[in-house]
Length: 380
Image 1 (cartoon, helix red, strand yellow):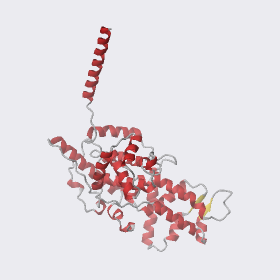
Image 2 (cartoon, rainbow, N blue to C red; image 1 turned 180 degrees about the vertical axis):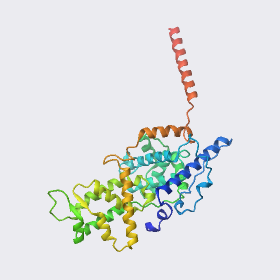
Image 3 (spheres, rainbow, N blue to C red; image 1 turned 45 degrees about the vertical axis):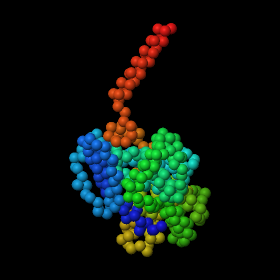
Image 4 (spheres, one colour; image 1 turned 60 degrees about the horizontal axis):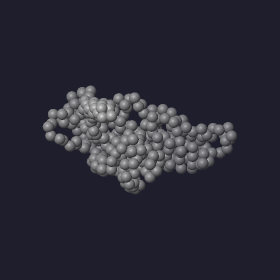
């Protein structure tokens, strides 16, 4: 496997800012709305196009947004890019329940990296495409199936179908297979994914050696009264390691962070947040550790790293609403319900129920039941 710095994730999928990421999603939304509007004026069925312009978007080589129809996004009947993102985030938060260490179906229990890969593939797809055109439940399940292959942790598709039923979001096997092909095309068949798990492990192992040095002893402190005066040992860092992984699994891998920052920066920032907010027995001066360990960097590179880390930390904190809840596992259901209601009116997938027809059929059934009751009484 190639190094991260030489990978397509760093070269094609790493965005320069949240604003650039937002622009990419707005472009996807406008293209989707333009397609939906074209369906209204077309008399022949049209297969929805699978877009993949997000691949390499950060390089600035894709077509400008000004080439899109500027009026296409003006209609209030369609979802906005921000409303679409709410739904994408919601289903991203559901993926660890489908596959991973916390899967609801035991046979879908897998390593954390499988869930992380599934989320990243899923998010990449919706950078170019829309939930109004492609069912997020089906793409989510297809991402889980594809991730199990990518991470060499293959699962039977039958269990994924079972998993979606347990989640009350049923997706059939045939729909999973069809959506897998759509997903592959939408991510430009680029499956390589890097995650921060190894970074957290590597930094923890390095800290274990670092605390044995004179400089290291000065940057690490035990804070409980009973342990305060004894020397720090490697085992004391377990709390920091575990708290960091918890935040990675519950927040970082589910968010846009892997699309904005390298796995190393995300892992280190996660450790900094965990150190400040979760550790009860030990505190580590991680910024001092960085200055010492990365002293061989050019001053400009070191300054850039130190400037970026608080930015990543702030994003992690923003997505956290506490130790037991977060943006992904405890979404605003009132907002989601309103968005889903709007989605039902503009999506092109799924069954659309005609309310007038449903009421007419219900009334007809009631009349038939009434006539049957009268007839039974007469015969009696």
